[in-house]
Length: 119
Image 1: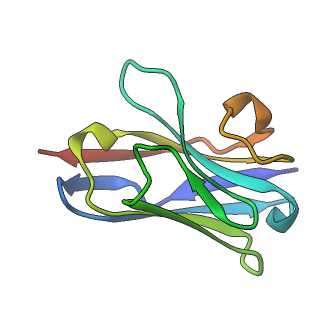
Image 2: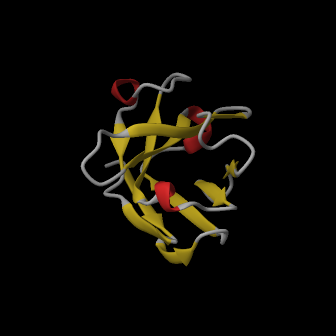
C-alpha cells in the first residue's frame, strides 16, 4: 500500500522559512515524479514544485522554494524561504509516473500539512 506522509508545517512570520518533508512508503520514490501542491483557503489546489531528476517550479515559488529528494530515505522535501502571507495554504505531497504540473497526473497523495504565514 502506497502512503505519503507530510510533516513540517506550522505557523511562521512573513519573511521566515519552513521545511516540509514528504516520506513515501510502499513505493520507491526514485521511480516516480514527486510534487508539492497547495490549496489556499477558499481556492483550488495549485502546483508548487516537482522533481524527477531536477526540480521545476511554479512562478510563485521559483527563487524562494527549493525541492529536493533523497532516494535512500524515500523522501521529497520542500524548503520554503522568504515566506509571504499569500503562501498560507494546506500543502500536499504527491507522486506520479510522469513529470507534470497538473494534479490529475499524480496518482498518490498525502493528507496535507498546514502552513500559515502571518503578516
